[in-house]
Image 1: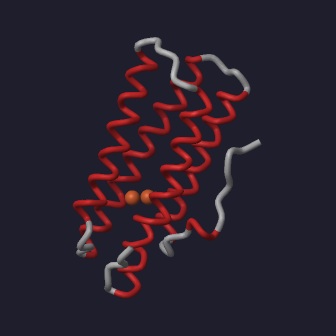
Image 2: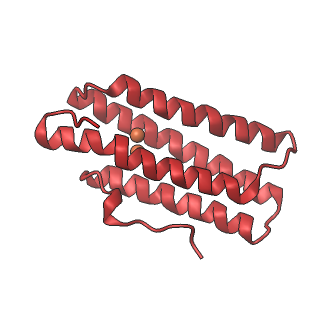
Length: 137
Ligand SMILES: [Fe+2]
Ligand SMILES: [Fe+2]
């Protein structure tokens, strides 16, 4: 069973970004399944690395879009991306070093981070494109 599914509350109103978020959700769900089914560390490591690569591409695409539209909160948004990238990098290094990463905890952490980030941060650039105004908390 998948950890979570796409729903409309995740939409930022930009199809290309919604599509990339759907892929991220699918990759996190796949990681969760791999862990729950007790697949080996090699498989889990491969899935985490695939997810990290896709997340990096997505963050780069989002940052390019925000730059292009003159989004005023680019710097703080980038900092959130970097914090997650660094954290996933540390997790990947742990896996490479043969350390056990707390299995299901990792997938649920990524899920919670992504949902919170999409709903609180990514939606701001979606709203900015539509209204030309930053959305305040
Ligand atoms: Fe995003
Ligand atoms: Fe983002």
